[in-house]
Length: 268
Image (tube, rainbow, N blue to C red; front, side, top):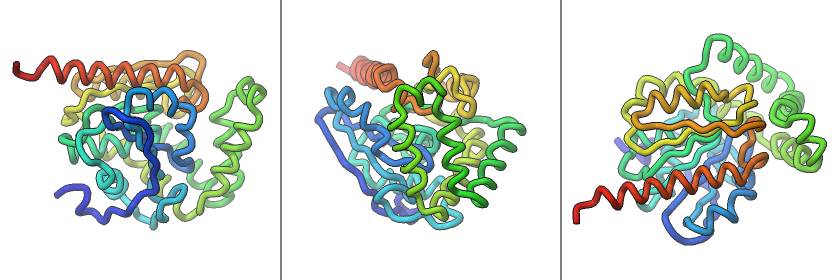
């Protein structure tokens, strides 16, 4: 059964540039605009598609009980051939599921600020954040921004912190909670299957990310055959916004190495 058999919905998306196909997937509560700072560098060498996941931005809402498989099926419907998948946070989990279901469509994986193999304490923290979002959505949004932005970064770019807060507050709470449930549980669903991923994989995280920790990226890299991990010093969770240059350099280096390896492995 392919992902498209699992009730895919059409995703709002935009495409830019020319070259090998690359798809950008955002995190829970955000939308495709979080990649805007990365687009100039990525579109120099790739045909880039940035999509709003189900329940986010201009895409259809997410119903309670939406599954990781359904979110992956939505993205699968966008793909026209082998594609480099770049997923942030929830988007990284979606990319992993798609790589397992459709390895033929996954040229590479770049997993940005991805959770993996949460401890019991980390699961409890996520459950508390989920309860806060259900009981006081605005407070949950403010707490997320406080967690994502260091005091120094917020002082440098106060308007950006406010923009991210407005984006979170604009979400439909029901869709947000449905997708947050996927984010809170999907790493446990994926963990037993990660050794089956065949796509070249890079896991990237900020050294100071308290939720998607460097340890998680190292565990992902060890669990996925041939995987590698990279840590960005002095950064927290929102690498596409906080450190777009470091992130895009890592992505382009990874996808370029993937392409070269593929060319070298072809028979003469």
